[in-house]
Image 1 (cartoon, rainbow over the protein chains, first blue to last red):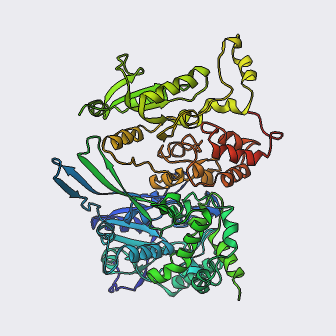
Image 2: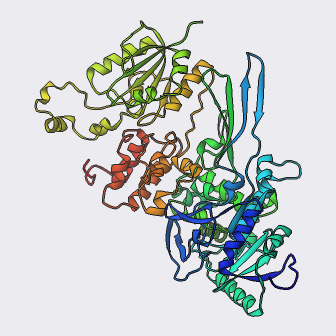
Image 3: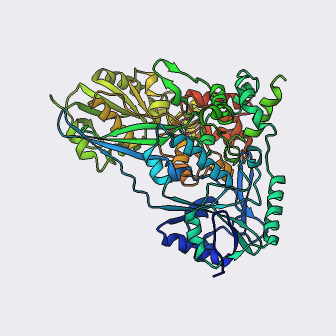
Amino acid sequence: MPEGHLEIGAIVTLEKPEFNRLLVAIQEQGYETLGPTIQDDTIQYNRINGLDDLPRGMTSKQDAGYYRLEYSGHNNYFDVTPGPQSWKGQFFPPRTELLTLYRQNKRDWSAEKTQPNQPPTALIGVRPCELAAIQVQDRVFLRNDLSDPLYLSRRERTFILVANCLHPGGTCFCVSMGTGPRSHSGFDLSLTELNDVFLMEIGSEAGRAILADLPWQPAAAFSLQAAERGFEYAIRHMGRTIPDVERLPEALLNDLENQQYDDVAKRCLSCTNCTQVCPTCFCWDVQEVNNLSGSEVRRERVWDSCFNPMYTYVFGGNTRPNTRSRYRQWITHKLASWYYQFGVSGCVGCGRCITWCPAGIDITAEANALLSEVKA
Amino acid sequence: MSKPKVAVYKFSSCDGCQLSILNLEDELLDLAGAVEIAFFLEATRRVLPGPYDIGLVEGSISTPHEAERIQEIRHQVRFLIALGTCATSGGIQALRNFTQVDDLAVIVYEHPDYLHVLDTSTPISQHVKVDLELWGCPVNKYQVLECVAALLQNRTPYLPTHSVCLDCKRRGTVCVMVANGTLCLGPATRTGCGALCPASGRGCYGCFGPAPGAEYATTAHLLQSKEHYPGEAVHLMRNFAGYAPQFREAVDALVGGSENEPAL
């Protein structure tokens, strides 16, 4: 153990094999440790107990409508770019039972609310764009006037270990959205993977407590410099870019009849995939399932989508009756009206909606086309 | 109040939808307690006289005899549910609708002159008024149960119509098109199966029929651009629910006339 005191904000190095002890230390605090693993030829988040569980030496080739895992050419543990799954489901699961109603007789009902029972969870290897997405959803689900108890109970018991990005993927554009390639706050610990060590930054007291008992070393200027060079490389190698992000809110909302919407409507399948892989999309449906005798009703919340034609069906008609209106709603919400609603962009630049669109529709290309068509 | 009487009928079909009802193992006793199974030859030879409150009709109309019988049944049944994709779109046997049935008969039967079939296999709704359509090959047994429960409780059944894609994402199934290049009809297909095929690494073949409001022609063009062999997209779309008007029109737009149409 080195001499000296760790403080929040401190940057130290940890030998790579010591990462196993780091995970154990996190688990000893009562957390289940989830991290990137290979499953179904993609990156999926599962329980990890050590470095051996990580997709070492792997990355993914990503383009519009295209995803393949491939070797990265080096032996890093944290080179994988985001897969189809985001951390969204950790706090806002695809299906949640909200309550169950029981009928004793014709008139008397009793309700049993679902109690939060998620064990404390540590998210290992969260990308800066994904942390930004979690913070966007915090604004949606945890408002001062109204907050979601199930989301809150999961969120407040989560430990976040960020893995900063050195090798972005083909559909990444976090630099345009200002969310990466490096996280500056909102994590308990963050790591930057250098050739032989992990550069660790302490983001919270919980993170400090865990790292304090491990054999960390003070970070030398050389390591800090290597990390900086890595970030510069990442910034230069974004797969996608939106040059004029700050122009988007006004430009998009002032040009709702832009012809680009007719164009994209010819390609869009209205299939909902973009919204489901998006780490900030939060539309849901509430459905009730009752038994044959009507004595028991289960109320569930499930992921839904503004691209589901029935999502906007109300008595008498559909407020967004075609794909053009649905795509316009989605992109103007993500890149424009989200600012006015939540004070932040709804897009973090992770690129999932580009990669996982079967039709290969690219939000950056659409945004740039919309911007270029706007009359100056 | 006496229990509502339920009748289950079979037309041109494989019996799979009827078997789905019988597969409601945990719920079957409750079902038999809530309704009177009055006519269900697949389950029991006991037949109670009509009329019946609920009629579940499996199969398509593909013979002159069936075309007559469905009229009689309509008079016997108060609420008629078309059960499964044969009953809602003509089923896999509606492949004949895209060719000449006589040409097929000589290939299959030694004495095709014994056959008494119609030129087309058509959905129940083309012959009589249908009160509710349940899609699927076979139907989702829980959707059948939900419909019966809704009728008993005098409410609208909860039958979502979104794409299969939404189901894949809810269950965490990786997109077979993006990650494997497998053709999949999920974007244009109605939910109900729970994304059974993609969850097994297969592309959706659209057995729950067209999802209302989906982009059928756009999907068809996209699938064609990702074909592994010429005609793959047409074969996929002209399949179990291929005679559903939305899929039919999308294929028509794709092949642009019969000349360059791939063989069945």
